[in-house]
Amino acid sequence: MGKKSPQQSAWNKGKIIGRKPALTVRQVDAIKLVMVERSSLRDRAMFALALDSCLRGCDLVRLRVSDVMLSGVMRDQVRVQPMKTKQQAGSSIVFEPSLDTQKLVRQHIEAEDLLTTDFLFFGSQCRGVPDKPLSERAYLNLVKKWVTFAGLNPAVYGTHSIRRARPALIYRKTGNIRACQIMLGHKTIGSTQLYLGVEEEETLSLARQFEL
Image (cartoon, rainbow, N blue to C red; front, side, top):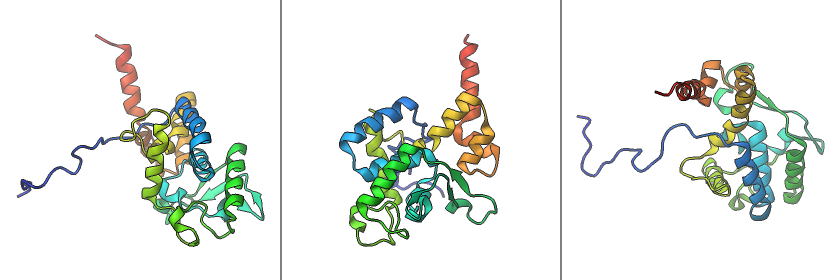
């Protein structure tokens, strides 16, 4: 019992598993630079909003125009109720899109002539179907393409590399894990420490200082 048949193989065979590393400032800048020449306005707006919001992919692709714009004016603050914690009171995530992100998102909305009730991001196959957002799989495939712009291995980096980018930078600069917890919408600080690999990184840092 429990033995694999000759035809079966491990689910992770040939895959790189483990925590996806956060994008660094230099990597983000490299991706943005290439995207100006090689990516659509939609993709540039999506990447910028993903960085600012730290949302999971499932929440990012389900954003509607009304979430980021009110009466034709971009919202300074955006509040999102994550799908994973939507049953928990007070579990919403609030973020402030930068001015550059607001500009890109506005240009995208105007270029696509989106209505207030439309999903913000959709695939080309979804045009004319406002109730169908870009799929999570399609978003992942886009991320895989984007990271190659910075010369990164798409098998190593994923959607969580974008989600972790800002919190990881903030923690390295300030050590404020509570701020990172709120930003990510985690229920406990322990979850945030695990998500960012805080204890693992601190352990490795100590080990480097006491080499034998």
